[in-house]
Image (cartoon, rainbow, N blue to C red):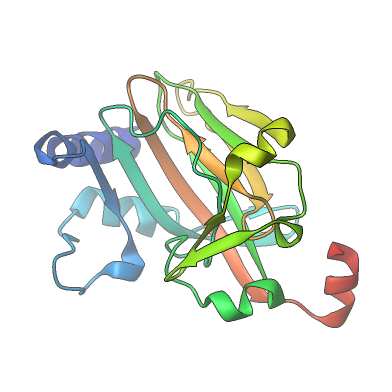
Length: 200
């Protein structure tokens, strides 16, 4: 996949260089929506070559791939993913009845990827919903609960990743100066009563 990743990085890098925010991504779930550029053959080929990843008996489907050529965020913006496909287009009213698992891969050969998260029960703090984007109402009050997980940079074909329940963990990616290059895989399933007991 090393050659495929290089082609994706080049393809997204060209588009990101022309973007006012220095960022470009491929989200299959948004394909066909007006204003969304899905004419990204290298990204499409990447998703076709690695449509899913199996880990500990669970299958995680390809959701999106995104590259930024500049630092997007300095301060964490703690949020919950409302779905696996895009992280922000799901149904908020069923968020507590589903398990959204995210397998985040750092494809960058230059930069680490830091994921900041809060060691709190997300449904025990004040949340704000802006459409399908769910975030902590006042993250400053929760600063003492902040932890950081670092995903190392890619070494050749060796890619590191982080697996977490993204609708149960308030989290935020924070860039290195050079931006980021990540791929996301995930699952989004309704949980049974037995599963809910295990999560509580």
